[in-house]
Structures are given as C-alpha cells and as structure tokens.
Image 1 (cartoon, rainbow over the protein chains, first blue to last red):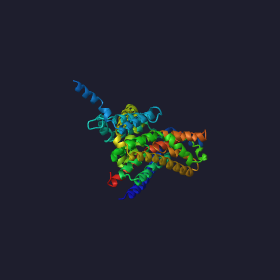
Image 2 (cartoon, rainbow over the protein chains, first blue to last red):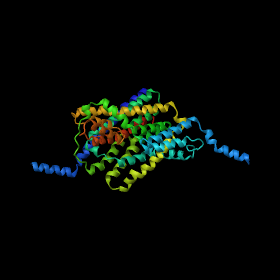
Image 3 (tube, each protein chain N blue to C red):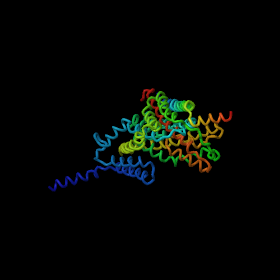
Image 4 (cartoon, helix red, strand yellow):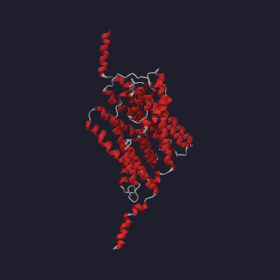
Length: 53
Length: 379
C-alpha cells in the first residue's frame, strides 16, 4: 500500500465513518427523546391539547 | 586534603560543564511555556507543569528520564499505558452538560465536520514525508483535544509525544485568536447576525442518563479501539447525570483531573529533551498542528453555512466553528462574534451544543482512525 492509498483510505473511511456515526447518533438521540419525553413538558402538552379540544 | 576539596568542587560544577547549548535553549523554551501560562493565562494548568518538566529534564546529570528516574516512572506508568488521558476523560465527561446537544441533535453533525482537519492534515503530513503512523499522530492534533492526541500519539508515535502535546494544548488555548479572522472571512455580516431561537424543549432525566450508555454501546461497536476514550468520557457523564454518586462526581471533577493534569504535564515536559525536541520535525509538527485546527474551523464553518441554507436561515453558521473539541473556548468565541454583529444574539447554548458534539466527534474520529489502522494491519 502506498502512502497515497493509505492517506485516501484514512480520509474517505475515517471522515465518512465519523459523519455516518454521528448521523446515526442524531437519530438515536431523537428516538430517546421521543421515547422518554420530559414529563412536565409532556403533561403541559396534553393539557394544552385538552383545552383546545 | 586539598585534592579532595578540589575534586568535590569539580563534582559540584560538573552540571554546568555538562550543560549543552541545546539544553540551555530548551530550558528557555520551558521558561517561555511557564510565562505563557502564568502571565498570558494560556492553559496555565498544563503549560506550567509542561514548562517545568521541560526545564527539569534538560538539566544535565539529573537522570530524571533514565531508567528508574522519577519522570520516567510517571511517563511509563501513566502515559505509555494511556491511563492519564483516559482518567482526564472521566473528568471531562463529569464536567460536560450534553443537554444543549440533546435539545437539537442535528448540531452533532457540526461536531463531525469539525474533524475534517484531522484527515486533511494527515494527507499533508504524508505528502511532507511523515511515515503513516507519524502522520496519524500529527493529524490528530486537529481533534483539538489534548487527551485524545496524547492517547493516539503514545500508541503510534511516542517519539512525537512532546511536539504533538505542546501543539495540541497551546493551539487549543489560541482558539480565541485563531478562529475570529476565519469566521469573518468565511461568513457574511448577514449570516453572523442571524438570531437563533432558544430551544425551549427540556430533556428528561431518563434521556440524559440513557444518553451516555447508548452512545458508548453504539460508538464502541463501530470503533472498538476508541472504547477507552469514549467509555471514560461517557462514564464521567453518566455519573454526573445519574445524580446518585455525588462523591465520585466531585472526585472526577476535581481531585482526579487535578492530580493527573499535574503528572501528565510533567510527563509531556519530560518528553521535550533537547536531543529529541530540537529537530526540523518538531517545527513541521507545530506548523501542521496549527493548520489542522484552522482546517477544522474552516470545515465547521462551511458545514454551518450548509446547515444555514438547509434550515432556511434558522442556524447561524458561526456555531459551526464551535464543532471542534476545544471546550468551552470555541463556544465562547462563537457567542462573542455573534453578539458583535447583533446585540440580541445569544448563540452560547447552541454553540455549546456544537462544542460538546465536537468532543464526541473528536473521540469518534480518533476511534475510527485506530480501528482502520488495526484493519490495515498497522495498529
């Protein structure tokens, strides 16, 4: 493996891998927030909806 | 009797006789680092012990870095085993609040963009003739993260530990000087003045407790070699968010990082021996290190501009510059620059989100690099 091949592999796989992993983490963070919403906010949301309906 | 006195006197002056000009120069360099820490307030907690370590190790005949020497013991016990950087990460995790990031998860992508500098610098280092592993160590300065840089360098290029650590820590403290001109160059006045709405959504305690566990599991499955770093930072954060181990959090925030920082600083200084430090390579490492941080900032800002476009102007691109791991300096710089162009602009919490994303991003990037090296048979 030449230095150029090494450098390009590291850059493509490394940066691509970092971006993809971080994107996956954003999805997980959204999922966590959806599964476990803040109670007070959730309750306030329900009350608000109740009031509207 | 007179011979004995003369011999004894000769022994007392042997240190002066053995002092080379290179060692004298390195003693001055050590003094310069102490001056920067004490008088200019640039990372004094690190630059002071580093500077003093550099002075100590360049005094001839002390044997501090010889086998059984005091600094050699600290170095072998804490740096070569990678224990010190990992312990510092427990402290960083215990001191970091990931709530701003959890409130707006998309900002985490800025933390990834802020790592481009690592890879671009690695390419440059290879082009300049560094070996593969040395180029990885030089590139990782772009993580803007001292412990990560030390962790990677001590594994793959221990002979570069001195210049890499000095570059990582000193440039981190120079972030408030390095970033603003780049921010002004790459963004328009209109973009800098964008007011980001405060995020009102609160993050539940369950999410804040689950976050470090889930991040650890996912990232370590992707890049197992990064487990010591990510595991320790997330352990510290879990302790903080659980609210159940106040004593451990206290130790992780204070006693542990204080002791480890002192010893780590001394060890880094101890790697700055004249015969190893005064080389052209050191200058190249210092130059490439600065370039790495500049490239991180450039790529973070460009990604910030992209997110600004995608969000139809809801995101101020300045927070992209905070997607590096220099916490919390980079976030403060974004806040100061934003407010300079719009007094009603409060970017701090958003920038903190990007900044904590940068911490995760830098560890992730390092972990992925280590895993690739292992995959290529170099690790």
